[in-house]
Structure formats: C-alpha cells, structure tokens
Length: 84
Image 1 (tube, rainbow, N blue to C red):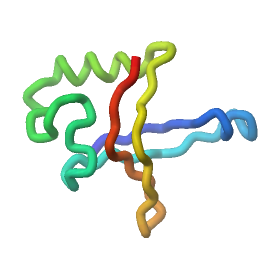
Image 2: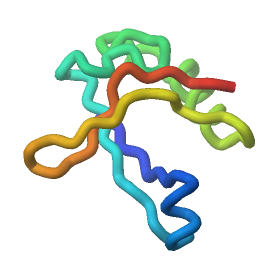
Image 3: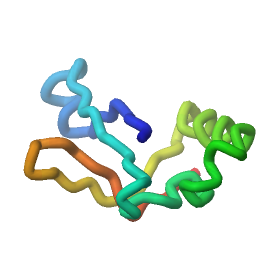
Image 4: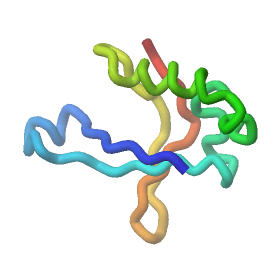
C-alpha cells in the first residue's frame, strides 16, 4: 500500500493547509499498474520506483486518475497515469 497526501486547486483556495490522504491499494487490482510496473514486481524494481516518485516532486507533474470513496470513508485511487 502507498499513501499520498494531496490537494486540489479548490481546497487550496478555501484553506491552503488542507490535504487529503489518498490510498493506493494494488492488491485489489484497482490500481495495480500505477508506476507503469505491475504490483507484483514493485519490490524487485526499487530504482524504477524511486525514479517515478522523484517525478512527483517536480513542477507540472501530476497524477491523472479516478478517486473513489469507500463505504468506510477512505479515498482510493484507480485508473491512474503520471503526466509530465
């Protein structure tokens, strides 16, 4: 499981300190190819994962995808792609 703290333009304008915790669960199959690497191969490719995570810290890089809310109130990402 990977978790991200994210914010969008609307929440920034209301309260600049607002972040949302979004979970990336690859074991459910909803987002098992997030980094362009199948979930079962992530542990064996740490350099590629590090490269993708470093991309997220650059300006004008974003994650495009679907966020859904579970019954328990958790936010989950699926159908995602890195855009840069």
